[in-house]
Length: 132
Image 1 (cartoon, one colour):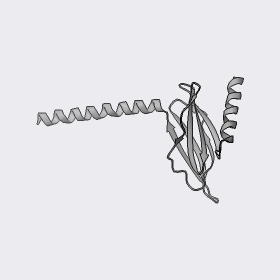
Image 2: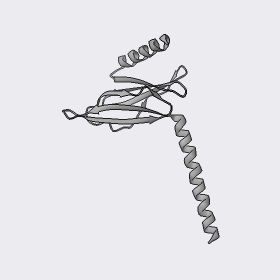
Image 3: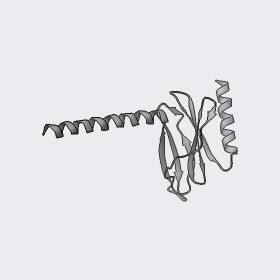
Image 4: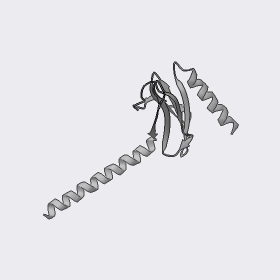
């Protein structure tokens, strides 16, 4: 809608005006409409998450950005991951880099699944040990 476009434009302008943020890009979690704003600052990719009228804290992605990263962009939206692409290097040929943010609600599912698998393996090992 028109309101979302105006709000999105305001958001991008606001982040471009922050200290030295460069290549500001925005993506949406299509499962719940949370926004992810990513930007480069001093060669590092950061992001902030916007959920139902509240900003989360700034997060360093801990990605390996390469030398002199530029031209950061992200996918429009997804229900599981937000992808980012950028270039790095000082001369042709430049390196194209990419990485992604797994959305927190997906991390919880992965964590619970991992705990379940670990418990099943442990249980199976106990059965084998007692049956020998």
